[in-house]
Structures are given as structure tokens and as C-alpha cells.
Amino acid sequence: MSQNLTLARPYARAAFAAANDAGRSAEWSQALAFAARVAGDPQVQGLLGHPQLTLADAVGLVAIDGADEAFQRFLALLADNRRLALLPEISGQFEELRAEADRVVKAKVTSASDLPAAELESITAALVKRFGRKVEVETAVDASLIGGAVIDAGDVVIDGSLKGKLARLQTALAG
Image (cartoon, rainbow, N blue to C red; front, side, top):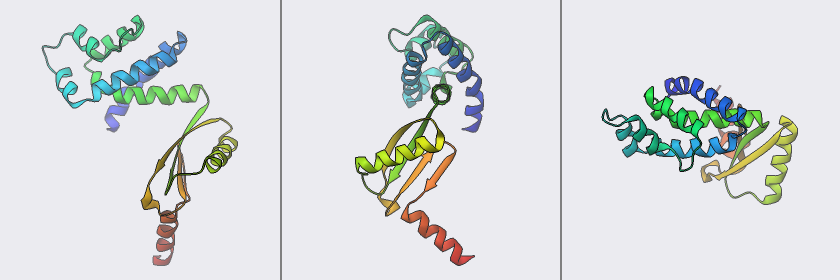
């Protein structure tokens, strides 16, 4: 996995540069997300590695309808270098670059139960204040947390769950 991320990084940077220079990062984002979903399908993965698959067929397989010429050339480059299987990693890194350029922090709030809207707004406001950027919050529910929530915002993880507190207490008592 880490090797795929390393291999995908220069392609993601090149894609972002091309899309950003053309002012089409949103379109490329959608096209890359589609191509990543297609390339990530187990049946398609078998086809992409087939020696009789032509370059044009490979590009046609993963390209979204109406993709611009520059995007199709990018896919052709990936196909020519046998890197279409890296599309999920390329898409993920592209999104990270785009969020950084747009000064957006993506945060995931996992709680033991559904959070009331007011509480979610309060968490979002606190994250905006902490990071000094716009924050996009995704929510999830994990009943195993027992209570509280875990906030994962890039490099920052705030574990305010009861499960996490119990684990820390257990470690403190054992040590």
C-alpha cells in the first residue's frame, strides 16, 4: 500500500497542477473519483492487466463520459506506464492537494450515537477556530465507543470517547 502511495504521488501532483492551471480542479476531481471507482473494481483490475487490452480501450474503460482532452491524455499516460491500477491512490492524493489549496480541513467525527445538530455545529466551530480554515465534517456512528466521540482531522486525532478514556485509565493503572 505505501509503495502504491509513493508511486501515485507524482501522478497526483501532475494531475493537480494540470487541473488547477486550467481552472478545472472540480471537474478533474469528479473524473478521477469515477476512474478510481472503476479501476478499483476487482473485475476491472483483471482487465487492466490484460496484455491484449489496447491503450484506447483502457482509457475508454476508466474515463467518465465527456472528460476533457487533457484528462484523457493523463489517463493515456497512466495506461502507457501501466499505472491505471493506481487511480484510487491518485484520486485520494489529488483530493488532499485540492483541500490544501482550498484551505479546507476534512474532519471525521465518529460518535457512539447520532449527534444533535447543535452539538455538531459546536464541534465544527471549535475545529474552524483551532485550524483557522474551513472545515468539512463527515459523521459516523460506532456504538463500540460507548459514549463521547473521536474526531479525526488529518494529523490531529482527538479521542473523547468513553472507550478511549477507559483504555487510558487501564494503561495508567497497569503501568
